[in-house]
Image (tube, rainbow, N blue to C red):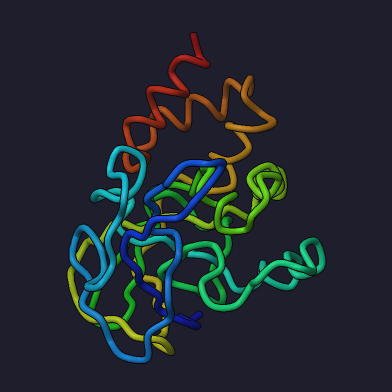
Length: 210
């Protein structure tokens, strides 16, 4: 398992449906090592902290394994670089990682916290809104890391497992609960009892249990 590319970017204004929107979804791969803190990589900045960023969404990870299928589905799309706004494009990590799994990359350590839920800004990036539905339906969402130990990371770094979460509750499980298994009571209970899944997700799933 390794990092294929490391990408960062700051806010930029774009025109969308007659309005000016501020977004940080446009990331650029870098060819040097970057320091990562509990909030983000140096040179990276979120535009709307109410829905992006924060300790539980410090680093966005997207598997390189998904790109070939996207190229088949969206042959006219620009899929160069960090096409989905990810910080880390990886090899060997998929959405079957468990919530709470811990990894070392470079001198930093990370914990899997939650899937990425696409918002309308992904539609802006691709110039088409159906990409949101496609991402959720396919389960190719990628996921977020929190930063357990700050350090330096670069493209080509190995991704080393440190510990596996005891509960085999995965990123894919969260996505399925949100999309097609919203009435799965067993899975809902596992979600609300998970020690790492963020509270906003637990609150959402508690409502489903009621």
